[in-house]
Length: 325
Length: 294
Ligand SMILES: Cc1cc2nc3c(=O)[nH]c(=O)nc-3n(C[C@H](O)[C@H](O)[C@H](O)COP(=O)(O)OP(=O)(O)OC[C@H]3O[C@@H](n4cnc5c(N)ncnc54)[C@H](O)[C@@H]3O)c2cc1C
Ligand SMILES: Cc1cc2nc3c(=O)[nH]c(=O)nc-3n(C[C@H](O)[C@H](O)[C@H](O)COP(=O)(O)O)c2cc1C
Ligand code: FES
Image 1 (cartoon, protein in one colour):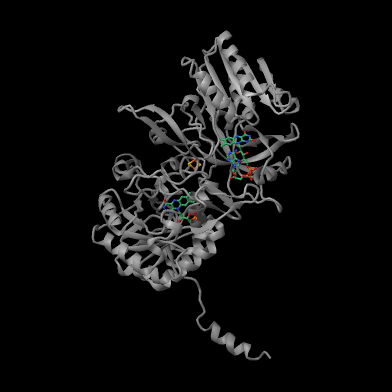
Image 2 (cartoon, chains in turn green, purple; image 1 turned 135 degrees about the horizontal axis):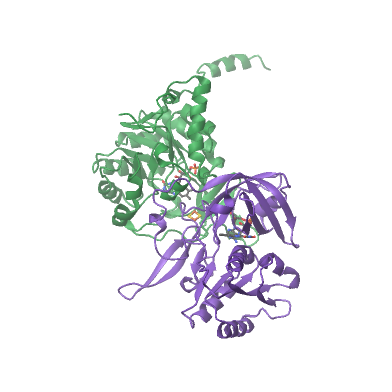
């Protein structure tokens, strides 16, 4: 189907995430985007619209202060303030579905069963995919989450899989020790894609007041500070699974997005960077376009996983290094 | 866009084109006004004066220096705009990492600002007299309101509170607008709440005020809430602060609890509202005076 927001003369920026075709790989990260950004961006030009996570239970969110800046990034402990799914369907979702861009609903929940029921409830025709935020570090005690281990990941995703025909994206956490194993568990449980990943659990203290800088004591680190970690994990996931990997963590420029694609991402999510410039996602899309033109790339999606690895390098190095004393 | 609290802002601006942007600005003037405050005048190739309303704010991208490396943007009220279309002014307290870095920005340098953000003061040009109650940076936020009153022939009474006469910034606040000014200081004890209460009640009783605005002091805010409860006919508004990340209503970091009156069942309707979006201007009566979660 032709996309009327796409210029046929230009490079093909379309990417595939499972059965879903996006007009370009750039979409917001959950919690770092809301309908208000239509005042700063043309939402018809983004690859997808990912909404802030909603939980089936009503909750107030975490105590303030909820954000603190750190070197090259920020900590947040927003939590998932929620007025429940009924309110979400009636009042939150409709303005997003007015655009010609696939809408992704992100779900957070406390148990596998609650996850499954919530995903079933938002499996609506106007929703293109469901992102299961099995990684939010703020909600469970000390940041424990489903995606910390392959077993709990499998349990949550397979429960969800039984309850919906919609594409399911599993949002993983960089706090897990072995993300490749977690990604594999998500794939085996029937996830259509993995999103790698959420924030890195962190903490900051004000040395004058001796108080934690966040009301919640600990929170999630995001922004450029976590980019190398997220990039490495995207690459590990890409090697471990066949389903698409969506990269997320510290992406602020087209070059960052390209790095994630080369490492194995089929698409990317932009979070914190929008707080510094609400128009940044469009600038990233324009930058991808310019890169493809300069490099003579006809289809951007060919870059996925195209990092040039020299598999014999280590062997050659070992032989070379033998010369040393 | 006025301070009508407790209604979701989601429905407003429906379908409107891009309005908020990151504007590239040149520093035209940048100087100290006293030991702690700096005045900053920027120019952008965009009609900032036309698109910015009284009470709104921008988020400033403070420069990164070797010593200071701010990451998030800093929310700052618009101190003034014009006369040129692209001119915008800020008046800020040099306190922490971001504002210290900002203070080093030379004339001729450049910086990005994101906005305009937030709602506006509720002001009616038909008012006869307004009272502005200011302390510290609060005067930067309310200066455009004083100017608007002046432009519309609305009389202004100003109650200004400061540590000492050297900190008052009376001229910076009024900027040539004629006003009846009452100054109170910590240094001579005249800023004590009990003494201000007497002054406030006297002003309200003797002057036909239609509206009272405040910014810059939690103590004065709580006093005004108590006093204005006796005068329900007077509009009372406050510009609030809270830690922000996005400044646009997206991230939910800047919430505060507000008392939105009685629900149908008679229960108090308490709601978390975003200072950057439903605010920064709120009706004084709705503020919940909780200081622990500041
Ligand atoms: C809507 C609004 C309008 C404002 N208008 C003005 C103004 O006109 N003039 C002025 O001098 N100040 C104003 N402030 C306060 C100003 O934002 C802070 O003084 C400034 O962010 C301090 O930054 P810093 O890096 O110097 O301090 P740091 O303490 O190093 O800042 C650390 C973090 O805390 C945040 N922070 C610290 N103090 C405040 C505060 N009071 N409010 C919100 N966030 C804070 C910073 O933004 C930063 O993210 C306003 C605040 C808000 C919310
Ligand atoms: C303020 C804030 C709120 C967030 N809320 C959510 C959320 O509700 N659900 C979720 O899955 N991730 C949430 N995240 C994580 C982001 O989606 C993203 O995974 C993370 O910030 C890393 O990307 P970034 O460095 O580009 O921001 C949030 C992040 C921030 C900064
Ligand atoms: S600062 Fe993000 S919602 Fe107000």
